[in-house]
Length: 92
Image 1 (spheres, rainbow, N blue to C red):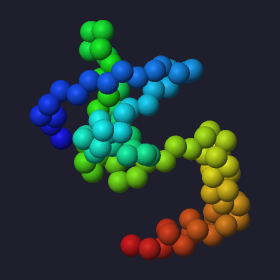
Image 2: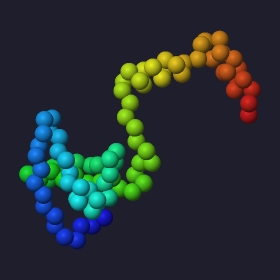
Image 3: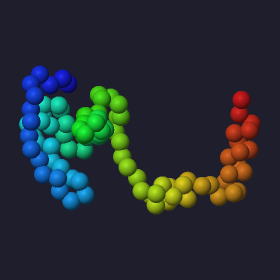
Image 4: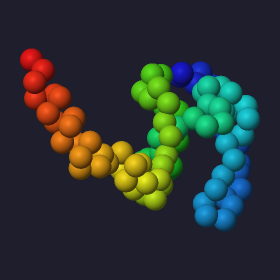
């Protein structure tokens, strides 16, 4: 969305660099809770842009511990792996 009028608001920078984007500005650009935004630096400015439409259907973050657990659970026991390999080998 292109902004037709320049809106300026002052915000507080909280611990760990957190800020709240004012509601009027979020609504104007179509940002809502849980959305993904792109942040970049241009000179001495910080630019925050809403994600492009359909860039991600849904994004979730997972911890390394979660990923390791999934890999562990996804590993077939060796006897099952051999049976699976034999099955797939005979298919065209």
